[in-house]
Image 1 (cartoon, rainbow, N blue to C red):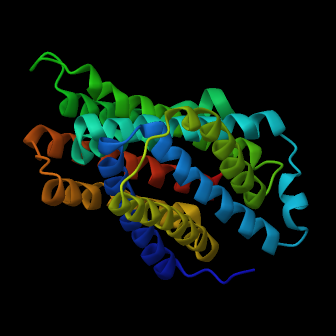
Image 2: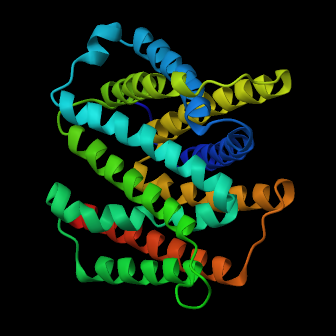
Length: 291
């Protein structure tokens, strides 16, 4: 068993957030030039190769990685994550990185809210209060009734809901499947699904953009490797708060590279959402220790 090292875990999760933010910036660039399904498909090809390589190096190899107690749920997880990636990349092209990530950061609140009906977990009044406050933050970002509401603003909220459900299903299958099995099914199912769709949307890509595509695939594998290492050296509850650094990293990239603007309501709303999310994580960790 790997010795616990919370400080290293925090550094690794911060690095994970940074690489994921860079990945999102590259995704926005490529999806602005080419079909989203094709971009996500090629990314998944590399992801699947990465997953196969990891599985082959573990005891039992690929055959062990395919053994799951929940095949239908594992397939659903893979399809859900692939769809969420497509939805979120679409949001980047329509709304930019700043607003998309500001809304998407509410997903831990959705996880907390849905953990009761989906997993049967108890959610106390303090966490319900934090969830309510968090969604006030989302309303501050979206400003319904203050300005003409853009339907596209709902897209990252839909992506957050999909990612939250994916996370809950991941926790559910963890009752019988190892993390390696879930990771394998995520990559392979997503790659098969995106290939079935993406091949029909193939477009010629320029030489420089193939370079960006290669970098996108590299950042995807690097980010997942960093996240795996972070969870190996520290408890998930200890490093999860550092995943929120993806928001300022992505916002900085959006503002400096893509010319996104940071509106006061977006900054205020995102601060409220992140604070509420951190509180729910703290309460969940405290409940885990006392329960």
